[in-house]
Length: 148
View: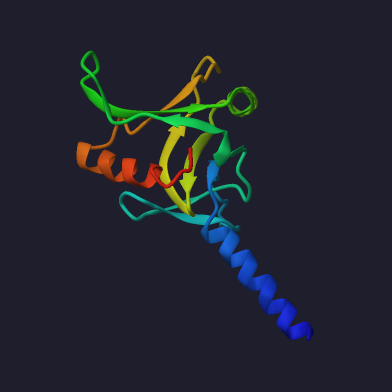
């Protein structure tokens, strides 16, 4: 009976880790430590070490735009808007940890990485400015999994 309970716990933890979504802080593990929560990138298939829990839940994303183009910067991008509580949490984190980087995770995969605004006033997250248009289309497909 105890053996069965352990398997249920292991399966539920594995399911949670695989389906994790939200905005996480990225972590650079030290020389003597390993990453406890490493996720795969949607683009490039590299791995990123992130915090165990998201700082902003996925349900705090209120909109995601289509692929947009900025003629001034000559880049394509996608904007993701957050709820007021999501914005507040992200801005407080950036103020406390100004050099931190963040990972937007959908269904256990890192969709993209981003840094906070230098002045600590994030209103929306601009995604994929440094990505090729083909990669931005892949990012857009991954973002469509979010139930808005």
